[in-house]
Image 1 (tube, rainbow, N blue to C red):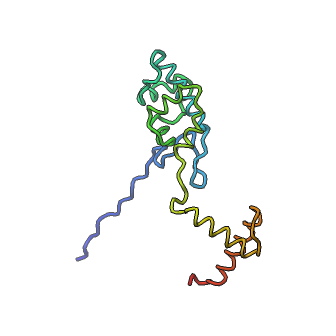
Image 2 (cartoon, helix red, strand yellow):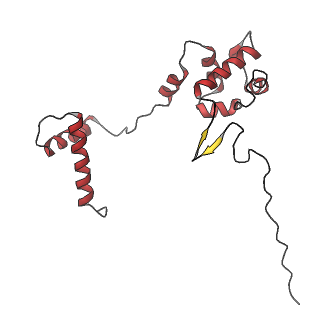
Length: 167
């Protein structure tokens, strides 16, 4: 008597368009999304929605209100409020406030908020050593920026050749 194996079932395939997070206005290309909404344009859409939905108190626009009225202002394909907040990496209330304030250049403000130090461990002593090492390599006391870059590249190449296998 042979034992019957359980019938194989196929995994259900999602027929929902956004199952990979791709919206209608976004096309995935090499790990990034191409969209018609730049950061500046997102602020403009939020401003337009706030003035349309809450003309008396535009800075009090909530995410649900934005999502409901984006089609009415001609931006049905715009990202949702939550997607905008995630993309700009800011709280929704700040986005609305800055969108309403016409004197603020939002993209510059965002760049300053997101700016981080690349190497907080790097001190002036490290820079002094690197400059002196490059100058010594070229047998000079002072360097131009171009001379420093040349010396840097040559020193790195020599170091890699010397330590070919990471030793």
